[in-house]
Length: 95
Image (cartoon, rainbow, N blue to C red; front, side, top):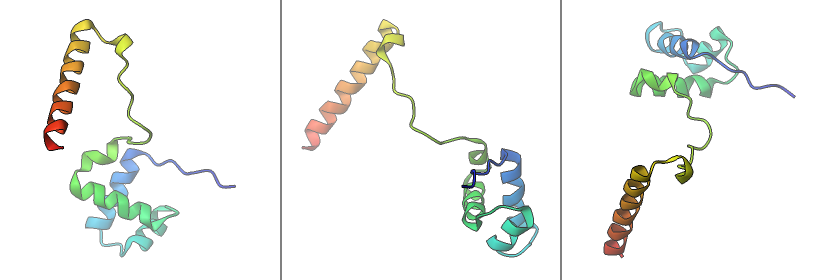
């Protein structure tokens, strides 16, 4: 079984820039040139780079952390609960 390859953020930017500016050909030829095993990965990096290059430096894997009320101050808890109530009121109006 093959282990997934991890690529550095700078490598992803380099590959996206190579596709966009160096005219190395299509996604497949750029993937082969840099040793990326999947051309769709190059396509994804290019899309992120075109939208916002900083997106390649973010790790969006996994679920976002849940807010734990035990670690929040009383003021933060009150604000959080007020926000929840406001959302529920808006939802009730829509229904």
